[in-house]
Amino acid sequence: MIFADHDPPEGPPLPPATPPPAPQTVEGLLLACMAEARHVARALAELDRGLGAVDGKLPRSLQRLDLLRQEAEGLAGALALVVAAPVPGTMLDPDAIMRATALHDQRNRLLHPPGAETGG
Figure: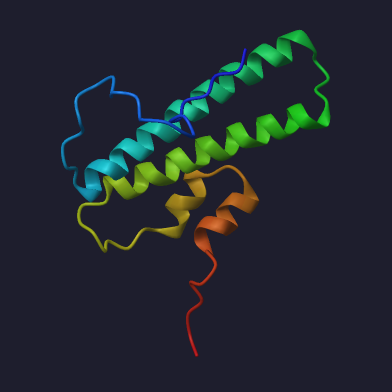
């Protein structure tokens, strides 16, 4: 079964299932993003365990699922560091980012984002 959680492409929008959201601070949204990343990581871990129980040798596409799960866990860990920072602009220890993320490629993406070159 496939679930789609988005507005229909045409026609009037459906009435909201919950009251309209209140304005939110950047910090509040960041905290919600961290919680959402953890939610996604847990769901992917559950799916990964279920598929692993069905077949101990996962095909390449299912190995990609496991990588995605690990990336979601790393993202949640990195977001937790940002949320825990006492004030905006706080310098984060690169070692803490490395401990929060298990995957080498993800560490490099977080520690060296495109467009963040320094120097001349």
